[in-house]
Length: 313
Image (cartoon, rainbow, N blue to C red; front, side, top):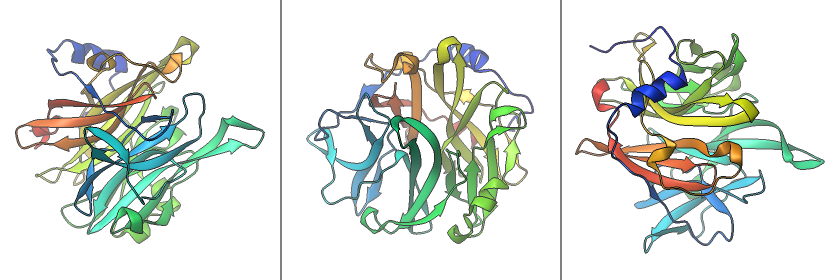
C-alpha cells in the first residue's frame, strides 16, 4: 500500500534523510567532443532513433547564457555530434514517445536586445515526428513555464505535468492534466492543470523532468527540488515521487542523488556548484537504473543507482 502525502517536506529534511543512508554509488563524467570549447550539460537520457542510441544535450559557452541543443552519438567512448542532425536554439532538452511518435522539446529563451546575458522570459516548446530528422513544431507552453513533460498512459490518454511559477504563494508548483491526443496540447489546457499543492514549501520549488509509466498504471516522476540560500546560492537535488492518475494522489518526494556522489569539476558560476539537473532515467532489469544528469551547469554525468521506481510498483 502506497503512502500518499498531504504535507510538504523541506529540502533540508529530505537531504538529511537521504544522507543518513548508505549510498555507495559514484557518478562518471561523460565525455563530449567536437563542440570546441563549449560545455555540454543538462542532457537527456539516451534514446533510440533509427536504431542508434542518441543523447540530446545543452551546448553552451561557459561565460554565456545563450545555448543550442545538439544530438550526440557515441564513438570510441566519446559522444560526438550526430552527422546531419538538426540543431535547436533551445535549452534543457527532453523527449518522450507517444504512440509511435517521438516528442522532443526544450526551453526557448528570450534575451534583452541590449544585453545578451539578460534573460527576459522563456517557455517550453514541443516538436513531433517519427525520427529526429523529421521533427516539426506543434505546441508551445505558457510564458515563464519550464518542466512540461508528457507520458502515455495505460488507457491511451496522455498525462501532462506542468510547472506554473508564483502561484498560490509558492515559487513554483507541479501541475497535472490529461489530454486525448497531442493536438490538445495547448497553452490553455496546460494552464488548467490541477496543482500538486503538497510537494514544495512556499519558499522552495521544483519540477518534473521525466515521467515513466509504471507496470501498475502509476506514473513515476523524475524531477528536482530546489532552494536558495543567502547570496542566491542555489541547491538542486534529483528526486522522485509516484503519481496516481486514477485518484490524483501522490507520494512524498524522495532524493536519489547529491552533488557529493559525482566527481569534482568546474561550475558555470559559484552559485551553481550544488546543482544537479535530472536529465533522464534508464531502468534496468537487474533492479538498478542509470541517472543522467547535468552537474553544476558545466558537465554531464551518469550514475548507476538502485531503481527508485521499484517501490511504487
